[in-house]
Length: 548
Ligand code: ADP
Image (cartoon, rainbow, N blue to C red; front, side):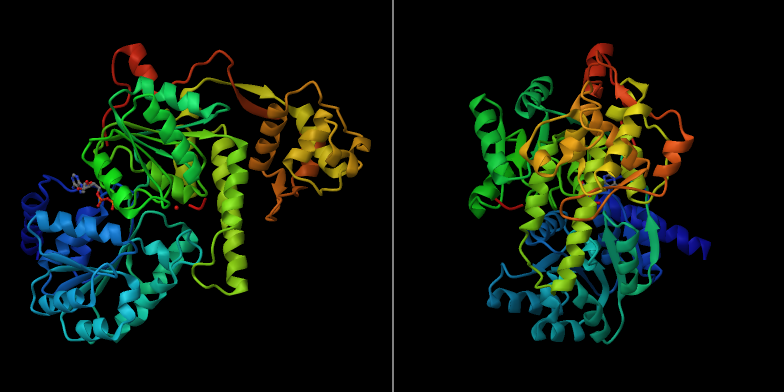
């Protein structure tokens, strides 16, 4: 038995070397391959860039029949199939980009055993022709890529993913089912588990070679330009929330001579393809794009992923940022945040098309989830605690308090006691009847004189102008900290309202201090590149979607 296991592991290692050119497995890969080859179903949760594809491609080569890979995106299938065929592995895809004639031919070849791996779109599973093919061919494994699409609670719900289960039930012999995702939170994991009761493996979500930073930036264009100046010649992606932003930034940066391409859904397919290839083959160093760009892009030397705007969820952020440093070398993920980003994203979410034909109730649920995700994303931008810890905790992982490789850990902060401000904020929220959001409360405390404030008779609030000597920025920071400590909460409404929590009373009666971390004024941004320049050396050991 032990001998047999040894043989098998030498065997799969040999496949890794021969077909993929790698000498060793990464975390989790060998275990997943072993379990699949033992006939176990698998749910693997691994971060973007961890190397999920190999985990089903290698077993597919060793299994007798065909592996069907269910994948949500045509571009993703095309790239994977191209790479496999280049590596000498016979693979094909069947999706709406093929004519009926091509599909018939591909299925015929498949039935004759010409392919080991076939990529299909989930919608295809329901068609009579495909089902007939699958029932008369030996299907050894069904692999569900981007498995979080099965969950209504995930950010990328695809109703057609729900058909996978009934497809599998129709097959004469139940194949091994393996599901892969990078973005499963607990709720999503539970939904996927319903799929096949699999062996669950979650490799660490930490990408140690990535440096994370958030900078509250007023003039983002200047910030981006100075960043690019310091990273001359490096390859990177700049994500924007809207097509308009992509076009503006593209014009600005190309006008200044930067080697930039652009990508968004408003461009023709041909132009998108050309820009994508220019980037992948390093003819253009920098890609400016909406979230339409990136899925399935396997470019190893992306040294930075900058976010010109905050994305809509931590899931999106980690997936997009995760496209940096796939080669394991150090890379930077920097988000330039402004409160305006929250409003733009809220607008984009509110005007999102009902693509899945959901019922009103389902739509309502999705909206609530979207808002919660946006709120968590906003909190990432305002927290003063370790960013890596925030990310890992979000994905259900516990970790040390400080990572020393994010802007919050590497910048110097000083603890400032803001108890009197916090107490006034709580008082003001109560006095105003717990009916207003952050901006209104800040306005009252700062003593601004707006029509809205007058119309709501808040100049009569006894806390009006009582913190007028403080900046509005500080007042907001204290509110964010109170929300983070759960002394205040924000409602799930479209216009989130600040409310006291059960802890508020105790906060006022029992506490005398409330410390928040404030950036030291003279501090310069301490990115790895800045530190490298200072030390003349590397500080990080190489290591381990859209509207408008
Ligand atoms: P994911 O789907 O998890 O985002 P991919 O499967 O696209 O990741 O793999 C990311 C990159 O890592 C690819 O370039 C892939 O070839 C590479 N890779 C995968 N496994 C290994 C390995 N064992 N050693 C080195 N590189 C690997």
